[in-house]
Length: 196
Image 1 (cartoon, one colour):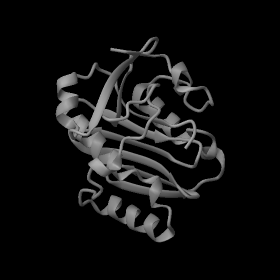
Image 2 (cartoon, one colour):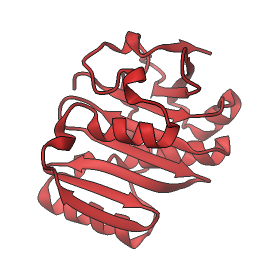
Image 3 (cartoon, one colour):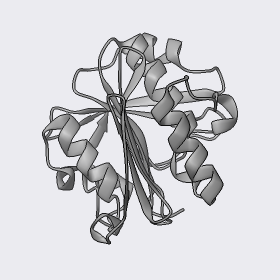
Image 4 (spheres, one colour):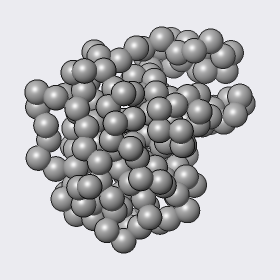
């Protein structure tokens, strides 16, 4: 899992106490601000193994729920990708984490999990509910947006590194993903993030 970007973004500074309240005890966090963009990042990781660089470690799924709230479109998408053996692309634990953070922070949250091994996932949550989920699942692109589900074949355009995450970052923040070096092979210390 190389060139992993794993984190949660907000446009207003997140309150550390509210972040702590949203996370299970085994999960720790750090808050970063981008040095040039008006964007904040919450890096979540196993408390016993903090990463050396920002946004470079997966949040352990073992400490988070995997069941999705009952909404027809998302359930159908999960069922379909499970049948095809590509369900790993839908990061259900990240959906829960995104929802929990947005509820506690009282602001929208963009959660990303993207690497060079085929994972490319994004979830935007607002008021504790997933509003938009985008993911590459095998050779399909899944988009769940405000109750509507769209599944398309990946024509190769979205196959570049962090393509889904980059698009969703730009839609969410209005800032270029390249400023965060998404879509490049730059190491995480070049993300331009400064710990708060």
